[in-house]
Length: 430
Image (cartoon, rainbow, N blue to C red; front, side, top):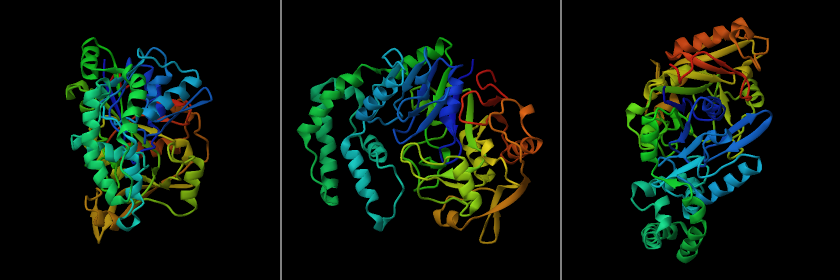
């Protein structure tokens, strides 16, 4: 019985939601281990669309335990609203089906206000955040002034935590021209929502270790993509947490030996939202075609995604950093009809050939892609559920991707529908 980590291996938006939902049928527990409600997972099940942010993708399946781990930062007001919306779609969510780690940091309204105020300072350059307070909350966690789920249960502790946080934040707000936080109003708002959140609170580390010893299958769900990792992404245009597979154990309170298989989710082309380097970005008709056919708009922000050819050099890099055992290749159908498809195999930097993206931001900006051209196909791959349903040129493309990234394709997705998936290797049985 394997425990599986699912991570995005590009800049996010790779289709993790569908793959996690598809895999959750084989799992007993689905656990989010990092990120916040800046993540957006869209699931399409029997024609019904579910849009999730903070909730693990497994909530739409009955009989599963969904876990929000300590590696996540959680906006309690957003979570309550999200639960209400999902319930309206007929999904049952109770303390028996959803669990939140007691040591999960909480995003406060002042985190979002700080996030947006910083982004508005165009003189220092935008990072491209969603403005939802994710980064400032992680800062407070490291600064030891964050309010955590368990603090909601004790009034004296809660007030102490609020006072400690406001010493820092009110000084920041003064410098940004923002009014001081209304302490009493914030505490009243937290008290009002405490019961809604505490009903799901639990010592997740203890429960997860017990479930693992009992032989339960655990599916670890990541948010964003590896190229947005705070350490290994295209810094500073990154998210504020570790996105790679190594965070999965830390983010729920398990040891690294709990991870048996790492599945990297990869689009058959490349997209990015927001600022930052993007070597294979297309500013032509091909780029527009990829965006239109792939419906490339952010689930959370609605922002148009930047589109480009598949970057094998970058995916080879993320496969190494996350120890990826196999990839799930999504949106192959978006490439239908292209006469020629390009794959980036490396870069040229000031006349020097590189097989990886360098760390320094100025060097990343000067990298130009080296392309290999692959014959396209005119037949449709949409809805294919076996290799026999794919045109020969599409299979050739997939095999070439495997060779270039040094990692096998374990799953192939050919539409947003849950069952339009070709399974090559079952990660839970590998």
